[in-house]
Image (cartoon, rainbow, N blue to C red; front, side, top):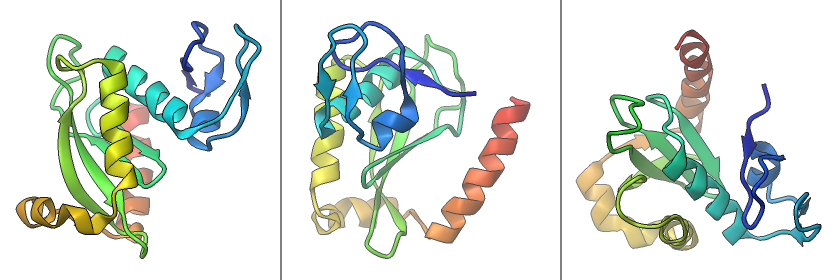
Length: 155
């Protein structure tokens, strides 16, 4: 099943998450304007996270970030917490932040926060890395993705 995501300035769900994550030029079906750019990709993801509760362990990859849902419930009336991992040059992922995605901040603020984390080198997160001490190798993440697909199908 292809999952559709609302794109910035477009009120129709006609753009696939894959198109947006690949940062491809997309012709908006409402405005007829081609959009391409990091902000639009991050905004689309932030919109989805703020407005749709996800099942536990759901993950999203965007540019150098991996967002992993650490919430214990998909209840929309509860806060949805995500661990934010940053990909290193060796394709390992290191936890650098923890974010409540459906808290009081707006979609655009969430998009800006994620973009800020994405743009910073991993060396800027030394203190957070020491505090979280959480890392995944590329191989471990591939195994996780396979197991999550089974979990999601059974959920």
